[in-house]
Length: 272
Image (cartoon, rainbow, N blue to C red):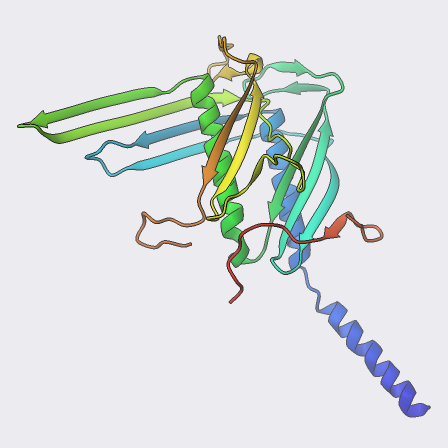
């Protein structure tokens, strides 16, 4: 009996040691996902400023760069669900905010009545799991730019020279500068039909954005005159690897917790 008691004590100590080794990686990944959710809700509710420049002439070194910026004080965001993929160390957070009066990105007061905005965010502390999440964010930035081009327009600079039937110079550049609020990702749920985000078979990411064109303003705050459909949708794309650079890279809840453990279909590389 004494030996059995010692063995039982040893087993308890082993389990206690394993629990102590759980560490803070999951907690940090979930914190990142929560912060990403808040950023995405701010961009949807308050809005964002987007600026892009493309150099795509046949005799230029092609390049495309888009930047977005959002800054606001916001409160009232509620976390609805946290999903965590243990194998990939990827956290996916869902939440919402119920809106009242909001000052948007161009300083206008917008009065919402009982409007609820939903959002999601990702996070990981594991380097191998970051490429698909970075591609997803790149796709969202690209979608922001595509939406601005569709609504506000873009400035095109074109210059070509031909000598003796040979193209010697070809410049094809575009610039965009706009402020947009109210854009949202349709069907954001992980298992939603026609989900508005994800990855294709090659691992490239896509994000769809929808917006009510009647609410969009340009960067100077002027209401845009748009005569097309009221609800517009664009799709942004993002890649995990850079083929053009020198260095290509590539819901049951626990007690007191909103975390649900399940697999997330992010196309990560096998763990080394």
